[in-house]
Amino acid sequence: MKVHHLNCGTLRPRLTPELVCHVLLVETPTGLVLVDSGFGLEDVRDPAGRLGPSRRLVRPLLDPDETAVRQVEGLGFSPRDVTAIVLTHFDADHVGGLADFPGAAVHLTSNELGAALAPRTRLERNRYRAAQRAHAPTLIEHSPAAGDAWWGFTALELEGIAPGIVLIALPGHTRGHAAVAVDAGDHWVLHAGDAFYHRGQVDGSGSAPATLRTMERSVAHDRAMVRANHERLAELYGGREPGVLLVNSHDPALLEQAQLAGGGRHARRT
Image (cartoon, rainbow, N blue to C red; front, side, top):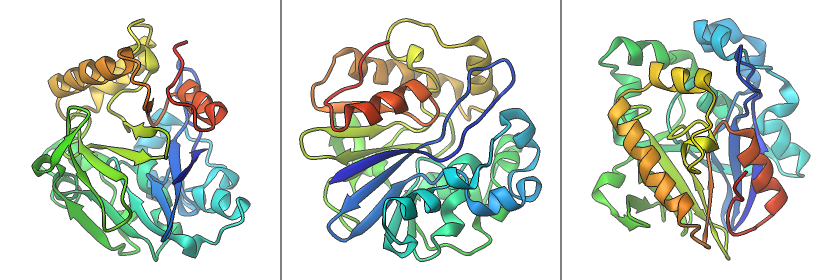
């Protein structure tokens, strides 16, 4: 399967380097699949109603040309070709583009769907925006925690979408946060979502900006689980597994490396 690495939303938090919303566009034999969707056209039209107060913190650029739907069209496809969207989690900067693909089924973990539909805490009530699902998407829940092992993680292959798309339980950032792995033929792409914010949290350098670390802690569902995820992903990254390209949602350097690699087997250290 061919994997395109897209930036579907530039973020400009104060006192922090510019961030991205790293989205995967996967060409499968049965249609296109998105991993997350970044910001969408509805967010551009109504940022206050769609994103709420959090927009003042992350300060999104909201350029329509950065939306997944415009980039899909730019690659010569139709939005109708996107048949499925697999979510790492339901935060607004990951699901804003769902409304631009109304025919696509949306896949996520059962725990994340439960958190979005029935939030238990003040943090969950603030983070999940009903406007992001007002178009009544088809939501399909999965339980990867009951699945098989994938490189030491508990995972579930989403064969109903396409063989080689794997949903991995990685809670911590949110109650039902997940990573998504895609078999790109000669390597796997592991999209870790918001399991870590900056490459310095997994490459051994410890060089993540303090503002990002503070932001990460402030929105974490479970900080201890977030730290544990850093450790597990650092083992994978540090092991230089030749068949795994590790990326996340917001680190622009990892996005650029993935785009330059064009099928390279692993992300380089910086």
